[in-house]
Image 1 (tube, rainbow, N blue to C red):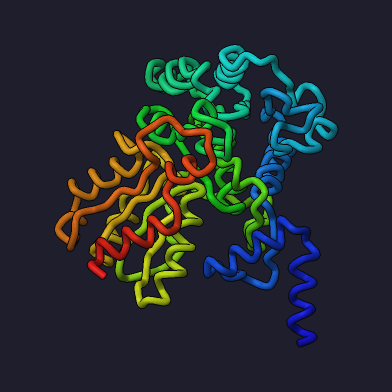
Image 2 (image 1 turned 45 degrees about the horizontal axis):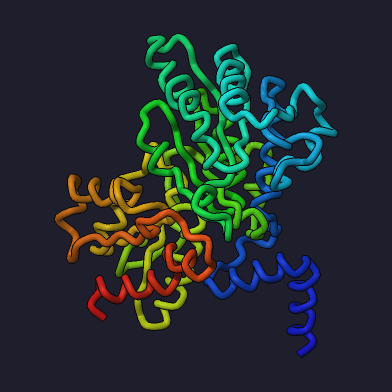
Length: 366
């Protein structure tokens, strides 16, 4: 009894949000790693990555709306302006086309800017700079001019922010050669992918999720190192399984793990793949898993037509894994409508845990 009470006190000591996050992890079957692991929110992991890269390389700087004196709209850049000053942490006017152009030009001139969008919905104001200026210059200059810039910020649905602030741009940017596109889920994903993106010589689009910022994850001793990187273009198997492959990215990875934790009680072992990178996609890891489980379900918050799941299904059909499928691949996506404002409609527009469980049972005929 005393031991149980002590464990509960330790859980609550981190604050209600951290305690809730830990309870969700336990319910999802996500267990702690080494004893040296610590709990770190995605927000703090991103802040660590920014701090470490700013300290490591004087060419790195951050610019965007409210990133400096206000510590960032989501407090990702908390404390960095006071530490590095106006030349490294730069508040910009509300002009995405303008400050994105500044970032791209600075990258061409040899600096390594990190350009924050308050939401990727606003990146539409600057899509010419992202694709035509950043994404195509290395090719058009015959390899003479690289553009090492990172575009980062929250992507996809949040909660109650309406159609113009809830869109997923993974398929949009993943469509474009010249860009690399990453999409973290956990704190280790966020830190390792951001650091790898800053060090990459190509323009990288980093699609975060606002609802994940406050969620704590256990971060291993290795991930706490200043040298920790997550390789771009490599997926991670979050859970081993034998009956069905669930492929997802960003917040939907957590839904897949929760569904897997429920299904295992019914004797179904789901293999959960966290894509981490949208472009270049780790097709080999997905193929290897499908050839083992013989069933594939993709899960994403974006729209169905020409989406990430559609690309995965096409790749599986065109490659060696197709002959191993015992049933047609299934896509779970956001509804093919602009995001409604009403809470109940919003929830029904996005794949939920119950939807994943239903799809798994249907594909397995159970």
